[in-house]
Length: 274
Length: 294
Ligand SMILES: Nc1ncnc2c1ncn2[C@@H]1O[C@H](COP(=O)(O)OP(=O)(O)OP(=O)(O)O)[C@@H](O)[C@H]1O
Ligand SMILES: [Mg+2]
Image 1 (cartoon, rainbow over the protein chains, first blue to last red):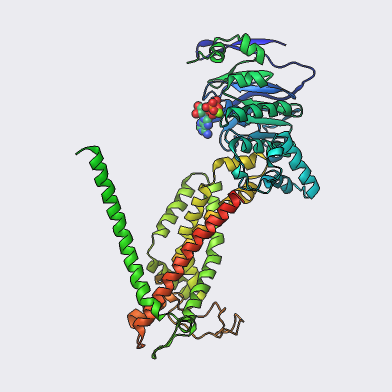
Image 2: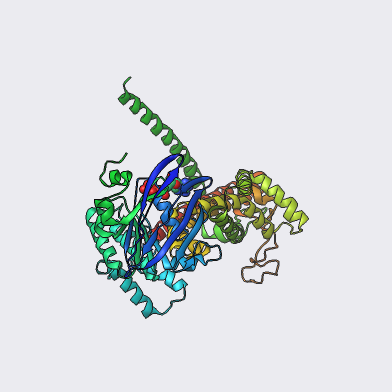
């Protein structure tokens, strides 16, 4: 299905080009419909109707302040109490933007990793295990196993397996970020949201993190905000371009980078923006 | 005058001012310790006071000070913790919280004599608690609550917002995030605040003179039934503390060695408060280290 439309904004015509993923192997697992986000009276997201394909990586790109974080944080209701989010967020047929949704349960299905690594002031082991314990997993063997698998999936196990009882605050930035990923996947989410997870990391850690994400995609649906065009190109199947609170273009990553339909997108991905 | 000499003069002045402050403090401390330390002995620290004869000690007063401190802390800490959590973690900025904050500001700058007189009228007279440890502990709670609340709130503030988001993103409720993530991380700094405020409470006299009273009935340290009048645990007995004792001896002490006892008591008080401060730093650092490295 191909949808290309021109939307009128404050008198001027602004071209938008939206192609939602259609791939039988990777059905849509999450989508937003008529999503609007307001900070007080100020509208930060005007239009953000995107659909996300299962077990794929979708990149959200766009200039600073275009609303990428705002959009991403709305997906697992991290904007509750901060912003007003209207519209529907459909997750496996359920609108999770309803007030009667169990937000805490939902956030365990839709996990999040932040821009700055935020390990807790606990041991490496407890960073991963304590949320599980809180939800009733008390069996030591089971916990050990989950800690080990999550750390392996996050490609951190080999570096920390002898230091599990050491404080997580002593980890390097890249390791800490990987611990945060391990922590997020330990609760067995379905979708993983990442907001510029590599922006505080050096190139080596960044490339390790990308490898990790490519590996994780086999089990999780990943939505990642990034400022790094190469990164989006390397790891994502789909890319959405945000500008001033709107998704101006959404398509497969290769289309966005080789054949963008909207002038601003083209300027942005080629680095001629602004 | 070029900027280099200007800089030198500024730095010199600052050093001078800082040095002066340190000098004054050291002189005070030195004076208290030099005149007080020779008076200290095991007998002085444990014996009961004598009203007319020389050779009395401050054992009961010292004990009273600690007992009152512990009671006051037991009452004020949970309240301050709850208030701080509410104010920092839950309350939105509106007129209610503004009012609470203003009230705390005003309370924290209230002279302790006023707190004492309020305690006298309210706890001693109105609630008929009499001159008692309980009245004193409540007065100290009033005295301590505002600063302790602010100090705990400051401790919570030092924990980054990203820690709270991290907890929420794992599906924890706000309460779980606060109790499992934020409070454990804030413990070292909360503890430091608590011990420092303990030092203030320990040295407080004005708030206690008309609440816990100025007499220290002899205690029977073998009687731990809190309902007996001579029991150290009895919260309804009047209890002169060390700080009040110093004030009292200096204003109306008639024992022949009043001066010596006053010097000795001051030294004990100063030493105790110094100890609190060092303990606060040491424990705070130790705990922080344990949390961050291990
Ligand atoms: N908590 C907030 N309160 C009010 N306005 C906010 C808040 N967070 C973001 N905004 C505003 O919403 C708009 C979108 O911000 P957002 O952080 O989503 O942009 P972004 O695309 O993630 O930018 P960046 O690339 O710099 O992270 C900006 O104008 C920003 O100032
Ligand atoms: Mg952002």
